[in-house]
Image (cartoon, rainbow, N blue to C red; front, side, top):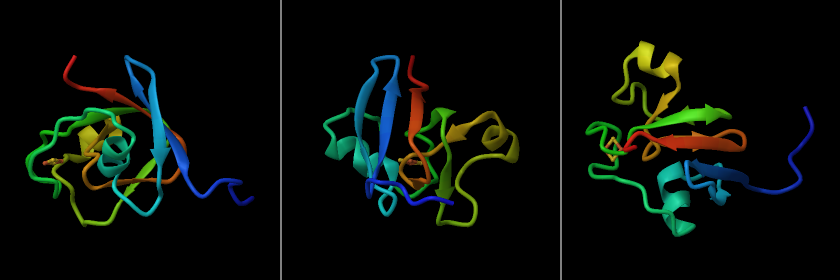
Length: 97
Ligand code: FES
């Protein structure tokens, strides 16, 4: 596998198409906020589901055993950005629309 040329990925938020740097070592939510993108959040530890979004493209990993998602939701591409770390460029869809 080739190394990425940049130390971070790009996160795109639909439907607005806003983009920010997505650092692999920090939760996506932090990267979104760091990029000035408004994203709903509350508990920030993967239980309340306030930040729930849809992963349209790309992949994420979790550092906690079982984020507040069912296996089905995960299979459908639901993500909790407060505890999801990007492993590629990602496109997220806000579930608030
Ligand atoms: S902010 Fe609560 S699950 Fe993400």
